View 1 (cartoon, protein in one colour):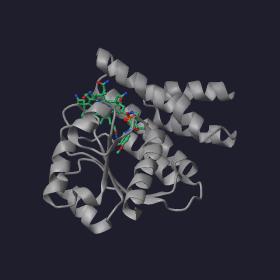
View 2 (cartoon, protein in one colour; view 1 turned 45 degrees about the horizontal axis):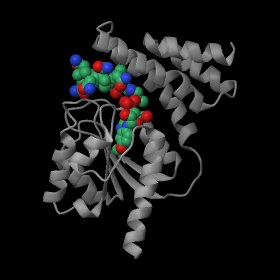
View 3 (cartoon, protein in one colour; view 1 turned 180 degrees about the vertical axis):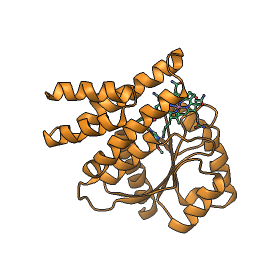
View 4 (tube, helix red, strand yellow; view 1 turned 135 degrees about the vertical axis):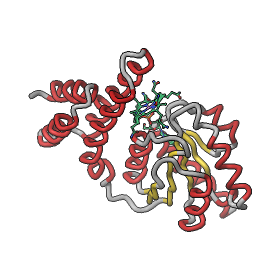
Length: 221
Ligand code: B1M
């Protein structure tokens, strides 16, 4: 198969949730020395975007979304070490979770991989993370940054609930808060009082580094 056929195959097979074939094609692509980033950004992510568009139009339902998500997650397991293994030194500690009421984790996991690749130590709290769990984890791990993902308009208000809980626990000034997820915007992030927002995984890395640098220069000033 040519690289173009592999990318097309990955796109098509993810769309129909054919996890074994997606895994096979991923391994085949890597065997041909194709870039892991290309598999992600030129095939897997566009395919999930199409899944979302079909769901919105009513052509796909939850089961189709679920199997497509699983097919992508299988490929991500193979790609994870390749994307994260850059050998850079630890630049900071990043605590991450998808907010309470929300089970989406593919985007969050991708952000984690990119952060790890850029040298962050990432502690992932998983999905459906309640404010109390964020608080307990901050106390335990003392991260530099807390990242919250939300993928539904109905779960985005949990950002504010989490930030309120941080304030109540006296921890708001101890950590940088970053938010993100498909429906989140810079305006929304500002409105809930987050320190940073990023639209995708690479932007998250850039933003996290900037925020960390700003915080460190403030502390040393
Ligand atoms: Co759901 N779902 N889903 N879903 N799902 C969306 C999000 C939706 C946009 C589909 C649509 O209508 N077009 C829609 C939300 C609409 C809205 O509220 N605006 C939706 C819905 C409605 C639902 C249910 C309510 C459906 C139902 O039951 N009726 C339900 C909710 C369940 C719940 O959470 N309580 C539901 C369920 C599911 C599945 C379980 C079936 C499955 C999730 C599987 C999983 O994650 N393990 C699923 C999937 C797969 C999707 C779509 C198709 C794909 C999401 C995805 O993984 N995208 C999605 C449609 C879409 O977004 N195109 C959809 C790929 C991923 C790489 O991108 O998630 O955007 P993304 O992550 C990006 C950025 O957002 C950013 O970086 C990531 C990487 O570049 N980012 C951050 C993420 N977190 C960040 C944190 C940061 C910074 C950046 O800082 C901390």
